[in-house]
Image (cartoon, rainbow, N blue to C red; front, top):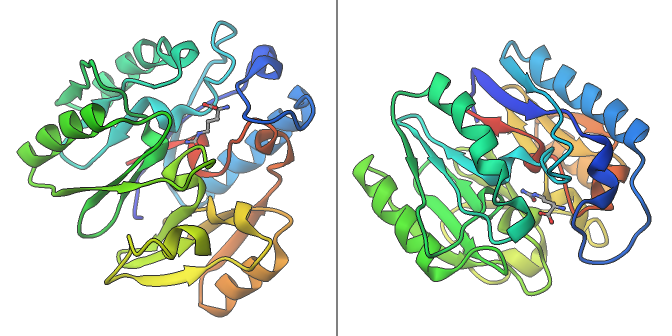
Amino acid sequence: FEFSRAITRRPAASIVDGLRATEMGTPSLTGMLAAHTQYVAALKSTGAEVIELEPLEAFPDAVFVEDTALCLPQGAVLMRPGAPSRMGEVAEMAPTLRDCYADVREISGPGHIEGGDILVTGREVLVGRSDRTDAAGVAELAEIVADWGHSLREVFTPPGVLHFKTDCSLMDGETILATKRLSASGCFEGYRILDVADGEEAAANAIRFNNLVLCPAGFPRTAEMLDKAGFEVVQIDNSDCAKLDGGMSCLSLRF
Ligand code: CIR
């Protein structure tokens, strides 16, 4: 959770065509841009460098950069998204990662894996199989990260949930914020678990970034619980991103 850099991409006007599991209304570009500016400012306020990439009209979901790669201290891995409309986003991200890292690997397939399904903790790389991430994708990633000395554990994303990290986030080396439906699966055994408040499941997609925890606004009981647990919480408007099943983690790559 200690990072010196982040990569983000400003939303394009095509964001209105972004993928969504259920129709919750059209996201507003103006609203998205305002929230994105707030998000980037919060990341920068911790002293980190934020690389802000240009919008990509051809890829409506490109603002959700997290899904295109996994960034580890030893190198970066380009993902192979399970959503066909998002495949091309990876090539758009590759040059930036090659500028930042000497070692950039890629998932060459046939499997699929998206960054939103990967939680890196102090002790392991946890990957949730989902509609976007399959066994072959996970197996290919496991080989790559093993080369860099990381162990990978395959777990499951709850049914009907887009990504593993839709339902959990790392708060510190061994503390995980999660929904009860995910923590009840037992996948976080041995970790300290903080459950989000009932009815506030969407608050589980938060990020610990240096001294701050960025949380979606509108989940007061979870924000208060985190505050009492000693975290410095910053609430960011996520109402437009939420219409596209997006949240705090999806909006950046952090390393
Ligand atoms: C998608 O369905 O791919 C986008 N609308 C949302 C991606 C959210 N990304 C993430 O949770 N890492």
